Image 1 (cartoon, rainbow, N blue to C red):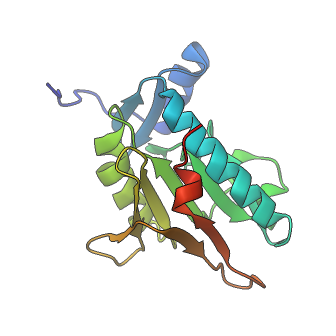
Image 2 (spheres, one colour):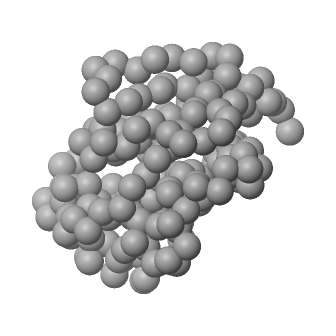
Image 3 (tube, rainbow, N blue to C red):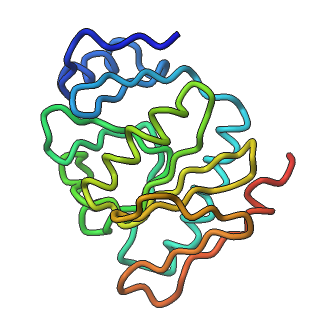
Length: 186
């Protein structure tokens, strides 16, 4: 049973929770709603690692982007928002400042759905990314081997079963990643 939160959680409060627990569970807040995610499954971590690695290879040839993975502290300066996308891409000029508060634009955010994070990733955080005009959000359902592709104005996802594609503004070439490779067995 899911219980409604009885307390409003600011980004500062969530940072305190994170400093007390370090890695797990993962704490986030979206407009004051506390999101708590248990430690990830191995399959989740494998998918995160594969996507991160593929995007890092791509970014070596596109100097205007930089790729990160969680843990993170993305708040856009909002007092009641702190999220930790599984994998995300930011403009290089923001990344090079080496300060979470300098990250003001996510070019791409990706979350790998897990049973413990499904509602938060599919709805709460996805709506936040749309609200803040993140150009592209990938909701990855590794168990179903499908990716939900969301843009800021989308009212429903595009479902992708074959390949991920992303061509950031100003990039010389697009990023592509076959889902057969992303979801291959170990």
